[in-house]
Image 1 (spheres, rainbow, N blue to C red):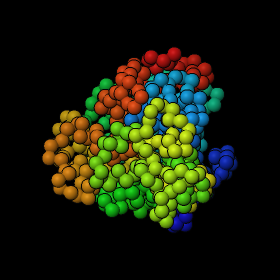
Image 2 (image 1 turned 90 degrees about the vertical axis):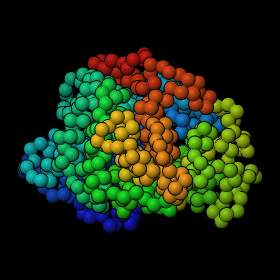
Image 3 (image 1 turned 30 degrees about the vertical axis):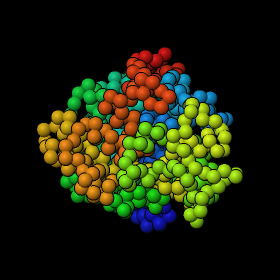
Image 4 (image 1 turned 180 degrees about the horizontal axis):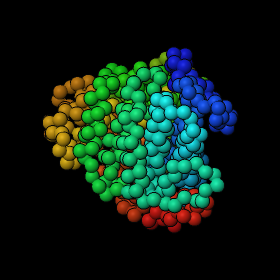
Length: 513
């Protein structure tokens, strides 16, 4: 979220932005309202619900983004001598050897269920408020946000508790099956989708709209066979068509493709269906560029400080892009340059990133070898106005291109409310943009493998790859250094040991101790 956006927001959202700079997220807010002084205006409701959206911003520093990314083929976090080994936590994620005691499990679980508890607490605080259209819509927004948090936990951990009330004296909740959680999430969204705003503008940006809820339904129905053992391909098309029929969104052009991820992205970009707003001062926590960049890249992008020189991509994933695919420009490799265009030299070393230098998982800490290994991602453009580790780029969760890709996949998998010609056309909207509308690059026939590959190239580093790999049956396949694993544990992460220690009603997922 950028300063120009903050200044231009209506009063509906200003209290929410102010709240994101607080360290105590809700105690003082709740004390404002009594039985005689319930919220009634949009501004008051925005203040009260602010902690729900603040919680969403914490998926970076609470490791949920890491959890969904680091076991996939799009990411590698090699040890670089003494750097990035971190007790082996990234290595076990790459090799799919995670356990219930791994900190990414604990932190992600705590993030999701902490946010769910926040939703429940705010719903309880509003129960006795006078009925009004504003209250009805706010309840719907909270329940959709709670459904998104539950969807995040369902996707990662599967068999989890369903808690819809707030009572800090209640007994430990029982555990529901993954299929039961699926039904709960779908029911919550379908019950509330028509109560949400249809407006797509600065006042609804970052909050659930009717079209965000339809997108979430399409997403969960697309994965229903994994989650619940059932298929709902027609439902995927139905909810995708609802978003298309809204006429609220458009695809960005080839020339402006990366604008939707820039430090100045925001509600003006009509490909973004739902994003989590970040601001270097008021809504901190977007550290993605720091994970990726070499320390010398501060001179390439005019940054206040260099990157942490860690995350990169695997060679096979980089090679999945054609050289003339505009999306390949998100990967930095080869000779790097200063901001003035001269070759970048750092500590006496010419900075030439080698996307193929992986002699072992530990590539070593040499300035001219290990520290230069791997292509780095700048899909979210490095922000020269970042403060410390905090960038201004809003993080895109759902965008319009995914609507077309989900729709096409559902048709290929068996949906009867769409045609193969439509599926090819849908994917070619995305494919064509990637190649500046070169007709020779378009699909004339289409397979599921085509869609899988196109999704990888289109949605890299957008927290979709693990879910896609599981749905397409490739998550157990060999990757760099990792052989075929095919464990019983491939489709679910373990329930964290800390969660089971505090709740004896939680059984461990299959294959874990």
